[in-house]
Image 1 (cartoon, each protein chain N blue to C red):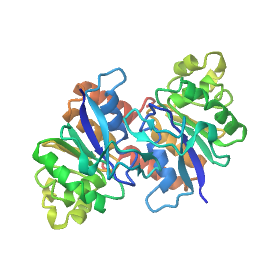
Image 2 (cartoon, chains in turn orange, green):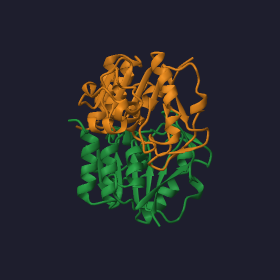
Image 3 (cartoon, chains in turn blue, brown):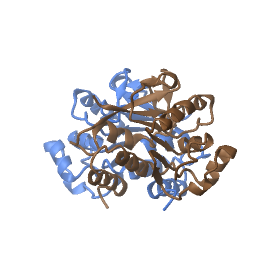
Image 4 (cartoon, rainbow over the protein chains, first blue to last red):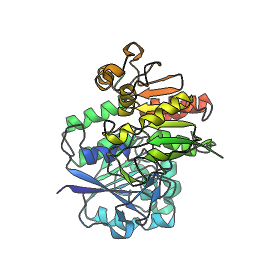
Length: 197
Length: 197
C-alpha cells in the first residue's frame, strides 16, 4: 500500500504551489517511474474548497479527521492562513513534528509555521524574514535560522517562498526518497529550465 | 460582469499546466491588480474530475453545455486527450476558432489541436514536432509552422509544451490584455526566476 502525503488546503489556496509536488508524488517523479506515495487532500471540512484560480476541489479528509498513518504533511500557501480554519491546523502540525514526520510549508504555509513557533529549531526560509517576523511576533525566535533561499530543508522540515514551488518540490522529493536523487534533479531541471532552452 | 475564461480539463489532467494562468486570470496578474476575467472549469460532465496529482475538482460546466459568451478556451494537458471525452471537445474548439476567440492548448492539449487540424493555419509549438506529426497524421499539414519555443502565440491561438506553462500564461495574458505588458512581464519574471536569485 502506498504511503499518504497529506496536502492541507484552505479556501483561496495558491493553485501552483502544490501542483508539481502533487503530480510527482502521485504519479512518480518522471513518466514511467514508480510512485511510492499517494496524494490526499485535507480541507477545513469535507465540503469543496476553492483555489485562488477559481478551481473547486473536494477534500479527502477534514482537518479534524486526518489518518494516523501518513508520510508527510504539506501546507500549501494562500490567503487564509490567518483564519479560524488555519488555527485548527496548528495541532496536526505540532503532532507531525513531534512524531518526526516530514512537514512542508510554502509561502503563507511557512508564515503560519513561523507564527506558531514551528520554525524555531530549524534552518528555514519563507516570504522574507520580515514577513516571518510580522506573522510570528514573539512566537518567532529564530531570525538567525532564516536563509535567503528559494527552499530550505532541515531536520524533516521544508520551507519555501511562493515562487519556490519547484525547489520546494525537489527538497521534499529528496527527503521522501521518492526516487533517486539523479531522477529528482532531472525532474527539477526539466521543469525549471524547460524543454526548449 | 467579468468575462469567462474556460479551462477544459479531462481526467488525469496536469495540475501545474493551468495553475499560474488560472490564478492570474481569476485574481489579477499581480497582488492588488484588477482582474478582468474569471476562471470557469469545463469537465466531461458535471461530476468530479481527478488530476494527475490526485486532486478531485468539480467542473462549472460540462463539455456539452458551455456558455455562449466567453473570452477564451484553454485546453490543459494530461493523459486523456486521445479519449472519447476528448473527441467531444473538438467541436467547441472548432467553433471558438471560427468565432475568433482566444484558444490555448498546452502539452497534450496542443497535440490534440494538431490531431484535429486546428494548427494548420498558425505558427505554433507543442511537445516537439514529431509528437504533433504522430498525433496528427494526415490531419497535421503544418510542420513548417512548428516553432522550437516554450510557447507560441499566433492569430489568437497559443500553444506550449508541458514545461512551458509560465510562457503559455504570459502569452495568453498578453493576448487577453489582462493587464499592461509591463505588469505581465513582471509577473512572468517573478515566477520564472524567483524571489531569491
